[in-house]
Length: 121
Image (cartoon, rainbow, N blue to C red; front, side):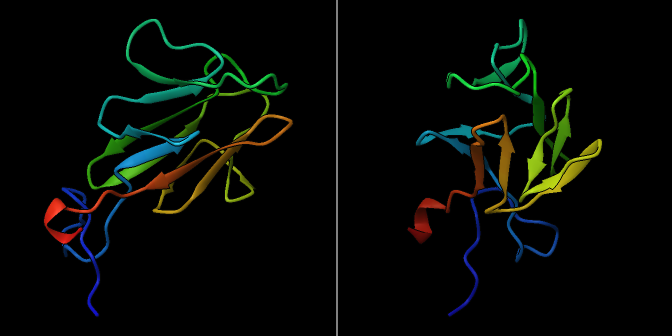
């Protein structure tokens, strides 16, 4: 069985899909070149995921995720730390499908996913 392609998300070779969405509490948020900011407050301008859990350690603008060329990049904006697959992010890192972004003292988690082309479903 061959590899499945994700909708409009493949690298130049077309075989290795990149994440297309972030999944938080069963809602999928699309990834674009405009940063998707994650934190306890939505940004005044732009797009965001508001963390509504009663948890410590999450900043108003905790981290941002955006499409940068063919890659999805996570940038830590916090004073408390952002973790990708349980490793602390220093600056910015590339996000792959299935990666878990964790923040806060009770470990609020967001997962990167890819949507399939409707013809492959």
